[in-house]
Every structure is written in structure tokens, then in C-alpha cells.
Length: 190
Image (cartoon, rainbow, N blue to C red; front, top):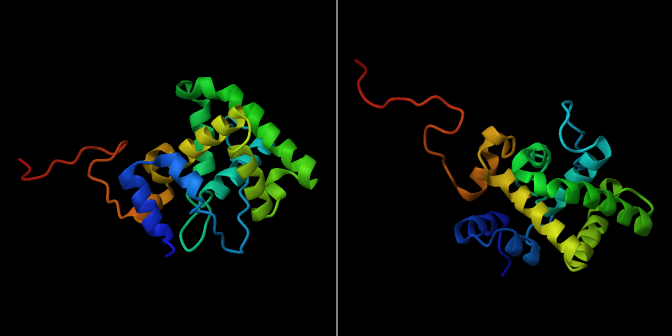
């Protein structure tokens, strides 16, 4: 029996297996035939324009669009790019920069095209090779999955989960007030 994407995402959030379960099962690998082509953000972030395209393509393969929105639709690459600028992720910055360049170079050496220009099945093959490859590459893929899932399911005020559509995938309705919103008093006003 094939599990629907919606059910898979609900189980992922409720059970908390996070990145390992999502990546190991490959349950989020389908993609609609229409192209998803993000462009780098206008405002500077962590990534160079070329790194951003690689990042966006990798995020989209980890959480691709099917009948529901994918990582690009949910603004996940922008979320990841913004997080990597922050001091909270200063320990990941050098690794991300090196590995995004290496991921692109790996695609170039095997397919003679940048990672962002590969067909989805070619991108999946590169990612699967990294996920089962040397420890440093496995670590990078785990970190990328971690940030991708944060961008899908986190509060939209942080830049991902555009319009709360990631929450809708798992049936989550946020309580009030959300971060960045003023607190509203319930009851009579005096």
C-alpha cells in the first residue's frame, strides 16, 4: 500500500523522525512535470546567485512539488539562505558554502551540467550518492534536510512556509498570537 504524501507529512511531524525518515524513505520524490525554476532573491543573503540556484534545486528535490506545494513554492530556499546568514548557524556556513559548490561540481563532472539544470531523476541520483557517501557529505545532506523541513513547517514569519501552506499539509492551525503579531486581548474591552 502506497502512503499519500499528506499522510507521510503528518506522520513525519507527529512522530518526529525528521530528516532521517523523510530522506531514507524517499516518500517525497514525486514531481509534477512543470518546471520549478527559482531565481535568487533580490536582497543579499548567504549564497551567491549560483549557490542559491543549487540550494533551491536541492531543497526542491528533498521536498518536491506534487499535488501539494514543494520547497520552492513554500519559499524554503530563501528561508535556508536567511538562516545561514544568522549567527545561530555560523558553524554551518563554511561547510554549506563548500558543499554547495561541490554538489554543483559533482553534477558537472557526471552530467556536464550544473546541479540546478539536471533532470529531477539525475538530481535524485546525485543526492542519493551524497546521502550514502562520505561522512562529510552525509552530514551536509542531513543539515540541508533539517533546514528544508524547518522552512516547510516553521512559522511563516521566519521566511519559509509561505502562507502557512506547509502547515496545511499536516492539518496544523496556529494559535494566536503568532510571532511578529500583536497580542490580541480576548473578552470585553473597558
